[in-house]
Length: 281
Image (cartoon, rainbow, N blue to C red; front, top):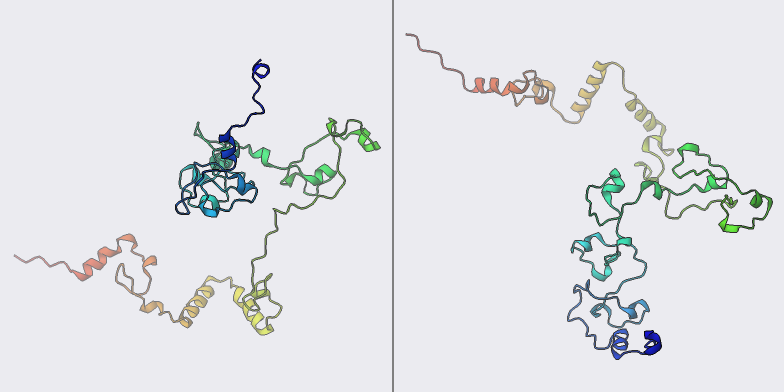
């Protein structure tokens, strides 16, 4: 009835035009001020804002889909340069760490998204095509569906609304977001990635033989100890006979292998302060 009596759909107020064109909006006194409570700049979305960092409105790109968790606590220092959204939107909140890690969250008023881990698993494109070589060990979801017989014959009148499966015979395209892991092993001899120095093809035969003998450890424990002692002497370590234990003060062993245990400091104290003999009456 109001539209019939007093239709106001074709009326525009001056304040609406002033807000759209940002009339009277003064630039900021200095750049870097907090603009979290301001609206989004319409001219920036169209690439027409000439005020730059002095603009009193927020310069937010449209590709930001996740709310900044630091902005929620008032700790974000990036301002408009932040790659996350400075806007309280429940549908764009970041994922809850506890629910994603432990599948449970004790906070009844948790502002973050609780996403079911099963819902994040994508359908296997190879299984939907007909066969997946990974079988039950595949990291993607294998969902059993009934193939549409009309589609297999050549045509289905239901189209995408069909309740049966319409398989795709195109080869799956690798997700560009899932890049293969780079080989970080670098040879210390030739500085080429992909192999270690012991298996380097540029290694001389005599050096390779010496490396192989060093890796081959003897079965006898005594021989292993002698080899370790010889290596210690070559490296400049003192012989075990000259080593003094700082717990008991005796020579011939280290403190971590002291036979007197954790009370070895008592014997050291008795040696430093001998007990006076009782006077004979």
